[in-house]
Image (cartoon, rainbow, N blue to C red):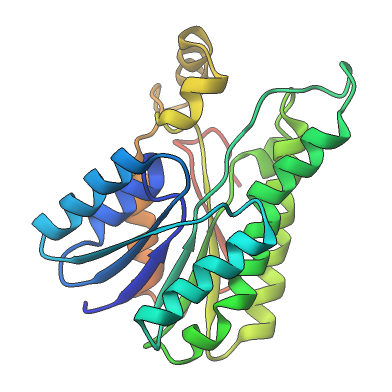
Length: 244
């Protein structure tokens, strides 16, 4: 494809799977923050698959980190074909009944929402120079059911969902903007916040009787990249946990 791609949160899970899926023939900028060893392993995989990998470390929970990532991109490339806003996470479960904490709300929004919004804006000049450029935001099934016990996270992804549609309108016709709402995906994301018992319950509730894998989302990223008549859409990949 010969694309220039930036993937945030690329050291593990969905980001790492996406990098490996898109590796062949592409130049991929792999963002990471604290997971240095896994990030280098992903870079090695990209190179082994015929791609070119560049690692960029930045803390995207801060404005300075988002600016830093964009500046590093501009040092190496004059264009960007694909921006995958994948960095994010459920810091911990916190229900309304227990009482929501301001600091947790702020931190969760910085990681999951503010970084996506600001990077999309900052990378716009690079995207404008790209070939059929597109932004792909990783949302969540949480936007469909509200994420009981993780309502802060659900609200963050709801904001990303709305931002996707607004950005798609504002940046058209030159830049396409879409999102993917994964269901329960077996990645390190859940290792911190979901017990094995809870993961088993998720699988039992799913019509397909299993949880998803990171490659399922990576395949959807490729589909969005290749479909140049798709914008403003959030694609659900959840095994039937949510149906329309």
